[in-house]
Length: 155
Image 1 (tube, rainbow, N blue to C red):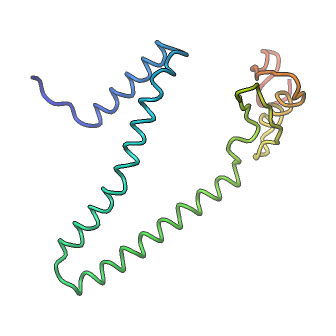
Image 2: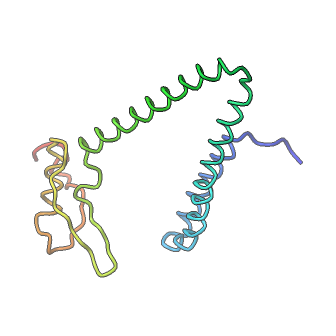
């Protein structure tokens, strides 16, 4: 047996193998989707017990009751502060960028086109959304501009 690969190397190799299999199988790669869902569900199931075990281990290792109250208060303030900050950043980014606006949603019965203006005032996004969603009854796909027309500016 050779030397064991480091964890980050194993992760990168796994990602490369996943990309390779996805490119190799193409549309047939959907058949392994249940395995991915099971894996993600198992990871989610492990998160809470790991957090609880790390908190309990940390509390038990403190020993002194005076230190426990002080460190517990600091931990609670840190946890609430980081949670508030992450929530605030997420809400600001969602309201600025409007992820998913103007996306083509493919449903079980057919394609549904949703109209919306892009959140940023970029001329290329505005032109793209007008070209893509100006006729919602036609199922059109975005095509890049021709060589005579620049994507960022006027022809």
